Amino acid sequence: MPRTAVVVGTGSYAPNNIVTNEDIIKKFENARIPMGKDKTVSGREYIEGMASKVGYKTRRKIGKSDETTATMCVEAGKRALTDAGLKPEDIDLIILATDSPDFISPPTSSRIQFELGAKNAAFFDINAACAGYTIALSNAWQQIKGDPTLKYVMVLGGYGMSKYSDPDDILTEFMFADGAGALILKSVEDSQYGIQASSMQGNGMYWDYMGIYGGGTWKGFSEEVTSKRLQYVKFLKGFPATVNIEAWPALIKKSLEKAKWTTKDVDLAFFTQVNLAVINEVCSILGWDPKISHNIMDVYGYTGSACIPMAIDDANKKGLLKAGQKISICTSGGGAAFATMALTWGK
Image (cartoon, rainbow, N blue to C red):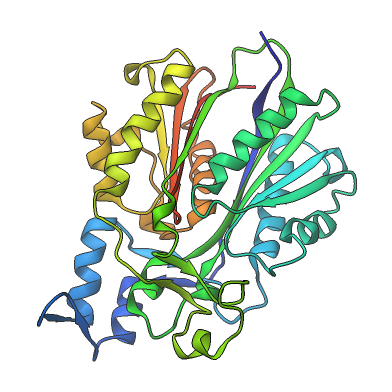
């Protein structure tokens, strides 16, 4: 069997500041939210209707603290190192998946490497929006397979999107939360465990539907940016309600086929924690009991590129992960980008 990557440590971090649905309702209690032609609903009706579909009850937010995507990732990384029984200097490479970086340049992973004390680690960032974590894991796997000098790779997902949320936008205030997660991969030979397969796809027609459009070379810091509040994360167009329902099942099956698995072989699934109703429907399409999906959005809200490692760490800490379990990972994000993975748990 060829060289592969196994998970030897997990860690996660979320800010202490808890924001409930009721907190957001109180903020927008006097607002009337447009819901199509000639129809509006109250802030309470809007939040309660959204929550019933997507499953968010509370979320953690950085707020006005000095915390950033990098500082959260450092904490998650420390916890993963403790879980793995490793020191910071043992890490050979750090890969960060985020679309809420501390700055446009340099890579946020440079700050993480320094503050973590991982002085021997190379580093780089990946931005594939909320599909980025699976793509970062796949990249780490490929790096390990191709470079025999790599022993330990830390793959981080960081999300500080509340810093980019428009305080006057009820949707982004409800949806976006903050947190970080980390997995440490170890290079091993001839293992029955570890990453088995991954798949990616994209549909770039959605590039101007949702994102942070100020500050880059497209809009820069023009007057248009501030007048349209494009320095904040914005939904400029509405995504079709079925975009993930149509994309996820086929791409999950593609990774499973590469691993020589069927849907019946999967023991546990981790999805982008964006919409509980969509997760349940995709599980139904695949013939899975919805309980196969380990969900954390009820506690942490939507943490984008951090939600997969946070959910895996949560499952690990609760003793739900056993050696030999076959795991499916499925993520999607703005752009639109999609990625899946098949992973056998165990060291």
